[in-house]
Length: 247
Image (cartoon, one colour):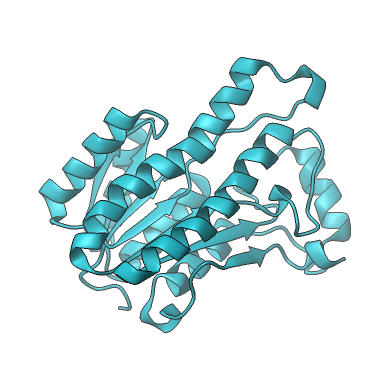
């Protein structure tokens, strides 16, 4: 097991990509904090991890709220004593024309996707600095710009994910001296249960690999980026989209 003895927090891990990441980390030996806005769903993921011989706890957390993030970190430390890995996967979006996005909707997307990554990273990094090592993975998106994957009706989501990319690089520069690696993963269209059928169909027509991405594809990349084999990789944006961004 590549991550035996490590402790990982995965935000937004009650379903989809986050759940796949939590299961993969547990399979590799990490103790996992499954956290999302629904406690019952998180507990179901914990039961699945435990049924496979892994260790995990469920923590309800709205990542846009600093007090809840601090409580999540406290529960993690009380249960496992440290934080080695943070995966900022929690996200919210909606598909809406730019001119119809309300201020409230804009704020909610930015608060969950970008502010949430900031709050969780800051809280976790303080413990990682004490330990002299750590890995932070930000799940951004090819639609965040600069990768050829821009999509319509997602200007608020695109802005938040672009911010995550920039934040990842800034954090990587500052935290490298403390032994903390920070990288961003930029998925394309992933069949995780939240993508509209129309977008899945249009993607299938053009993606070179001939299939949509699977949550497990992202989870496998997270395992690599948090394993000893990736020790010299930090500040990177890793695109995983079946080749669509280079078409």
